[in-house]
Image (cartoon, rainbow, N blue to C red):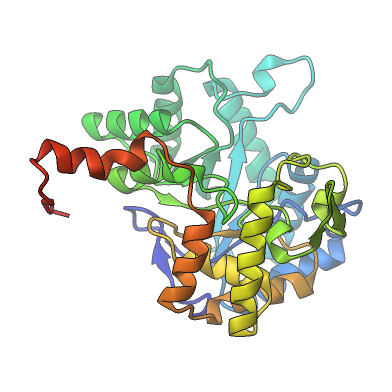
Amino acid sequence: MSLTHFRTLGRSGLIVSPLALGTMTFGNSSWGSPDQVSQSIFNHYVDAGGNFIDTADIYSSGRSEELIGGYVAEQKLRDRVVLSSKFSFNAQRGNPNAGGNGRKNIHRALEGSLKRLKTDYLDLYWLHFWDMITPIEEVLQTLGDLVRAGQIRYFGLSDMPAWYATKMATLASAHHVPGPIAMQLEYSLVERSIEREHLPAALECGMGITPWSPLAAGFLAGKYTHKEVGASGQGRLSGPNPFGNSKFTEHNWHILETLRAVAAEVERPPAQVALAWASSQPGIASPILGARTLEQLKDNLASLEIGLTLEQFQALHEMSTLEPGYNTMMADIKRSILGGNDVQGWR
């Protein structure tokens, strides 16, 4: 498989590469990628056939969007690439209307993103984070109006409850207006909680999932070694990061050990195997790559070449499976309801 083995994003006509290019690192010289490195990463991705670019208005305080806008304009790539950005986070401290998911901020954020990206429309516009206050009807109407106005082609939802996405999709369907086509959520071998509610909701409502942090901020790349307390190694988790030490659990170390064993069998780095696993899961459209260097990007793209055996998939699945919860008991409850029989549904 390659970046040109395209697929549709959810139940839509938007065609994307099997791996998206995340650009949170672009323009951040402290822990991310300086401008020149960012351009080399971008160029390699598109030269390899990739078309799905993911950014946000807050990445490097807007610098990420500015860089991408320049790259796309200079190379006349606008019709070829799928540009996506996000709104929600505050842009002006002390002003509550400069953040959130209300109509006022959505329009403010979009105007800024379009200017920085040097374009008059976005292919995909993400609600970055559920603000917990804006009526869902207002969000849906505002984004639908932007679709009808031609300023965005599609929209999706990131980091929100499954019920929220399901309700929005249901309202859109009932009122025959544009609805969300995708979810963006954390998903990896060490973070599979979306399988409980979000993944079934996405499959039912026709939304593709684009996972962020499919390598758990480098944990699954094998950058760290287990110590009695904490971990040692060089990577994003060794400094200030949104995860703290949450990835360094005993269970996660066992998952990493299994991942390393499978990687040794196929003679590939653990990161490539972890990405191959994530890409192959039901409902997953395009995992988002967050490379800091060109070498990291090349290494991650090579995951498309990996073919794991059923036994290897099973080993990874069994070690990383979720703790039993109510929904994992559904099959047993169904069997009991139907008199102890296994009954196959229509799909």
